[in-house]
Length: 221
Image (cartoon, rainbow, N blue to C red):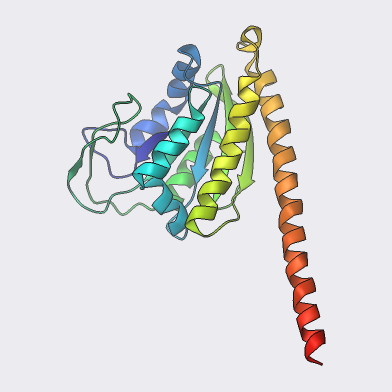
């Protein structure tokens, strides 16, 4: 997990700095064995469930632990007061953040990054965007819309996609580590399967509710 703060200055990684360094960060993580692929949690101020998950120490650490050295997950964050926050972990990916006020929104910041790196990717808010990097450019991306709205259900939804991604990446042999496109093709294929399964389950669940509703109405008459 890798947080980028919209209102970070001096210490910590801010939006402008990240915008210029994203590809280098990804390449460094590939070269040092910290990640085989990447993801971006996309949300805005209208998604308080995701806001709370990413600002909750236990949820944040759980997702960071699951992603491990297979998947680097980026997220934009925001602090609305001026104070210094101590890091919650000794991990080198956690930075000491100094917060200052800013008027930029999460959605506007995400669009700035989208225009620079993900022109061919169409995603909605909220989503989890999986992507791959090679030769200093984004070479593939897959956006998956997040459907859940309650905090616990949202966490489990994100967790399931990350677990599937990590499970897939763990199967990559050491000989294939240098073939980033082969890795991403395998990752995309399995995530698309999971996405389809979840959609079928969701439709079935909703259909079941409709059936129960019709049954109840019928029994009344």
